[in-house]
Amino acid sequence: MRTDSSPGTLPAREHLPAGAAGTPVLDVVIPVYNEEKDLGTCVVRLHDHLKRTFPYAFRITIADNASTDTTPQVAKRLEAELAEVKSFRLEQKGRGRALRTVWSASDAPILAYMDVDLSTDLNALLPLVAPLISGHSDLAIGSRLARSSRVVRGAKREFISRSYNLILRGSLQARFSDAQCGFKAIRRDVAKVLLPMVEDTGWFFDTEMLVIAERAGLRIHEVPVDWVDDPDSTVHIVKTATDDLKGVWRVGKALATGSLPLDRIGRPFGDDPRDRDIQDVPKGLARQLVGFCVVGALSTLFYLVLYSFFRQFLGSQIANALALLVSAVANTSANRRLTFGVRGRGGAVRHQAQGLVVFGIGLALTSGSLAALNAASSDPAHSTELAVLVAANLAATVLRFLLFRAWVFPDRDGSRQPSSTVVATHTPSSPTYTTAPRGHQPQGPLPQRPAHQPYAEGGTTTTTQFRAGEAADGTWRDATMQLQPVRPHDTDPGDAR
Image (cartoon, one colour):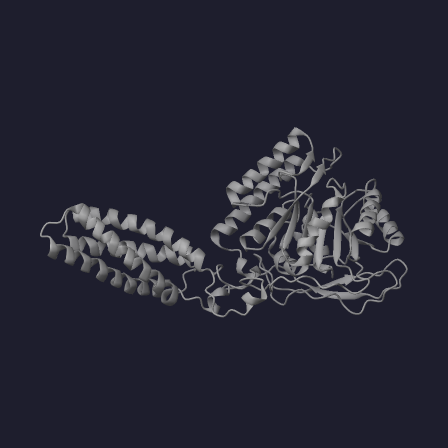
């Protein structure tokens, strides 16, 4: 699978145009579970803040995931009192499940979420979504670990948070600073292709989404926040930490084996209109050069060790040929997998055969250099032989890279496509979700998800209907949309997160 140069399915980022009156630009989702005490205060405060400070139309969506107290009634009351507030009910728990379902159905171009306790100061909301509206970034996260952030929390939570982010940096090479702050936003066009690749339905949902986005080359904007810990939080720290570590292992394994189709969500080269007019720009060249140099350096060391070993009981020409042959096979295999991102056994024999042709060219260069050295000196020193071979190999390396890139591993369109697409089935319940301001008649169904199928491990492809329920006053008509199936364990009733 080629992941270095595919343009993916995302267009270049552009500034969002000013929407029509009543069309929400921002949809803030508040996932809740048994939050009857805090929900009303949270929503009223957030609504008042957005009314006073946010320059675009907005919507607040309460995502109630299987609450057993009076949270659904509180959500319905807020929906009836505030025109910009909508309620959404899921019959299964899981913050990740709630966010993915609501974000998938939303028609707003900017999707955000925050925790119900409003631990993050709301003054960071506009800086959070502004880079997404302007087209500068793909995702945005609040960071409690930025130097300019001001955070009030206990030593235990501070230690857990910093330890978790160190684990992410050490195991998944994550460069974002805070994975679990409940204050994030994403562009809808990015969410459409990114969410089907996220497997987790609980608290690890954030981390998995960010890791995949970062590995795919998407731009993540970080906003320093002022954050005050909620001492009454119902999060089970031990269970959440255990599930997060399992998620880190799963995602790390998927990245190591190349099973994540990251090329599906790549951005094109450059977002400036002048860049879009450039034709035949070599994509991925810098990364391939770095990978080729690393493999080449290791191959050269391997070759010199083999040559020194064979030279003890063979002549210089035979020792050189054998060492170069063995190192060439290893070099072709390493470049095939690491430099040019070709996975699987398909075409491996042909690649090795072409690599041997390249080996022959290198053999001619190095053998010719040795012949010239022997002609100049009847008994050259071993160190002199090695120096001549290093110089000859440097020249052969440049030619080898050009031949590998243009002939052995050319960047053909067909090579960017995964060999197979496998998706899992999902049959969600029919949650209630409204898509227009009160009194406004919707003009048609919600937008459909992309035509391509999401990646997953599992069964067959099915398409499910998502039915939007009517409002309390019955004035809105139903709307349906096509949802792409998501992960198989989304229907697992035993998910306690």
